[in-house]
Image 1: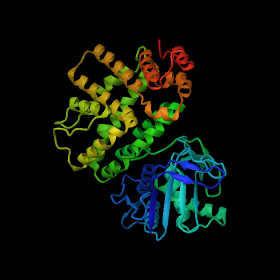
Image 2: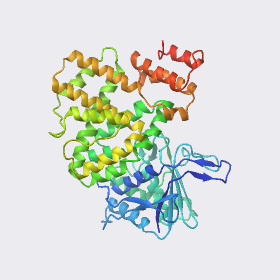
Image 3: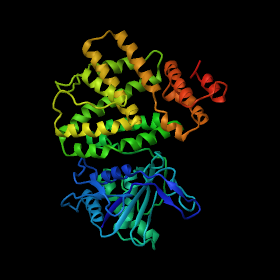
Length: 468
């Protein structure tokens, strides 16, 4: 019959570790999209989902890539996915996160996925790839190479496609790895050694699907730069890990339809790369330069000057001032107004998707929209030939204000004040290195976590420079 994706929490009543576990259907669909791309820029227009008429807890995957050249790895990957979408069985995908525990007490760090056979198969797998740490495998060249959550899912789909009952574990695994390698080869990765079972956590990698499509590759310099922000800044503390969980979920709630539009129109891909991906990389470069040396701003001024002299422009009818106003409004959670000029159908559809989703995505607004607004204001200053001293003062104040506005609402549901306070020294290094940003963040921390003035947390805030 079909592949379907579970939309509601997964309740498991059996085993020694029963519970209700959060599912991540948007990530599942995004990772199916990575499989369907099979190393190319082309996300098929027919990839999507529709409600399961027999069960509201599920969405059915739709996919029809057309005729495929199965003499190529990419063609075999797409054909396998198409065959499973058209399968007479119901294949259920349950995308789970770091909170999942198997009945025997093992976690995804021990085993990234499992497929329950007997009747219609259920695939349970790790959508977060070792809680964002990444998973390595042994390549055919003997090296440790990174894999992705999409490849983990594809491996389980290969088991289903090959009809493995699980009776001969070693043989089944070798055959599934052989089929899985088509995806690795299509993506230009080192294939996996079917005779080696060693795998483990600790291999940062991933696929920002919008940046990957816009840049033409999940390994483009822009995508790698954004991965560095993720791994070297956002995910170095427990606070950052929880932030990124929320960001991840929000981002993939809209990135698949956006990437689908981009994939079918080259002009739209270039526009997104020019308006979003490249400016975002430059904005974060400036932020990191400031975080490294907030006092004298060494490196920041040079990056700012390069940005202002880059000659980048929006369309003639859409100025940097207009861009800044739209981005500032969106960063504050407001609507995404239509510009004065004609965006064209593709960009207008993307604007509609973002306008609907961004108000409910505070972590995306902080991590993407707010730095873009700073970058647009910087370009606006450049066109007005503002005095270097005034620009420098404004930029540092803007960066302090932005960094200190790190969303706290989700963190309140995942961390105690004591746990967040434990991260303060590290956060002083990777985010709040200036006294101004520490003070502003500390004030929000005290207010939103209701920190008592005579508590240990308040003392920690004072000791670490987050309050007077």
